[in-house]
Length: 351
Ligand SMILES: NC(=O)c1ccc[n+]([C@@H]2O[C@H](COP(=O)([O-])OP(=O)(O)OC[C@H]3O[C@@H](n4cnc5c(N)ncnc54)[C@H](O)[C@@H]3O)[C@@H](O)[C@H]2O)c1
Ligand SMILES: [Zn+2]
Image (cartoon, rainbow, N blue to C red; front, side):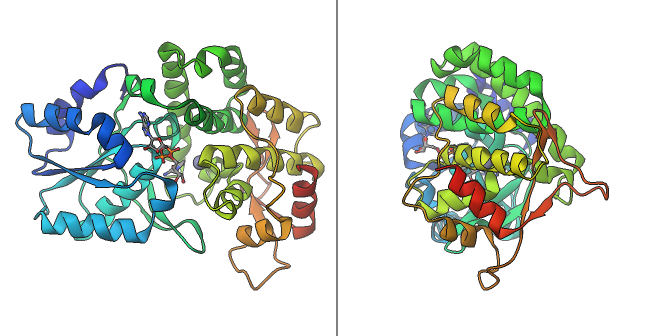
């Protein structure tokens, strides 16, 4: 569900689509401060039993430790098998609360109430949940589909500008992987979007959610086509983790898309000019396109390789052929294996 003022519909929608007692509302500290009492008030006024469980905001808290604290607190509060989780917040909250729901008492239902642009258009859709671990991003988790996703565009009014841009990295990703006309629409609306015009943001959320849910519905467990959503993320996750989470997820993905677009072009997979078009689009939304100097290419490569001992090992990428279309090989596969040397070159070219 996407619209303005939708939070008021949450209690009724919960009763219809995710009946439970009690509801464990999970939020980070910032979102709890902004929207916690309003959402709990709405739920309680409708006769629902709701309790708030908070954790400190920030990507570096998307960990097993926070998962342990939340599940312990819910057990202590005697949330039982009739309970359900309401993930109220950004992608960090959604991934973490979703993983809590996937594992708590072997799994309880949950719903997503995303409050960042990134969570509305990407993280809340598709059922991927999990936490970051020292070895890398999102390496421990589960597929667990929410009963529904409710995105109230009005909550974006309080979202800081850098987080609007970070969300736009994923919107641009959707355009590059599936819909060149969407890229034109985003560029035409760039000033409105950056000014947080709610009508323009609603158009972004609606179109992006359609693209993402189409891809996910065709391949929910990521055995094939869903891999195209990882465009920009192979390099992006390495940049994000190696920056010590100093860069926002969306910013790291922007850098990742710039590098991977160059890689696609230098490998002869993408038509000429694609990388320049991707970089220009990212620039229009104030997103970074260069690999930070302090991140050594060898370290990034190591972060991309799941087995650190095999340094010579190729890395799997999902790459575009042109704007709006991703490579599918003759054997049906949506990924290609790229040699370390090619990756190092693409990183060096993106400084
Ligand atoms: N599961 C998936 O398919 C998927 C897809 C994309 C990204 N992700 C994950 O999403 C995470 C990034 O999500 P994010 O960018 O939303 O980060 P986030 O959840 O950390 O939110 C960003 C910041 O904005 C604050 N905030 C949230 N809503 C607000 C509002 N309405 N007003 C003011 N401040 C608000 C938060 O407290 C936080 O400090 C990453 O961990 C990434 O791996 C998951
Ligand atoms: Zn992402």
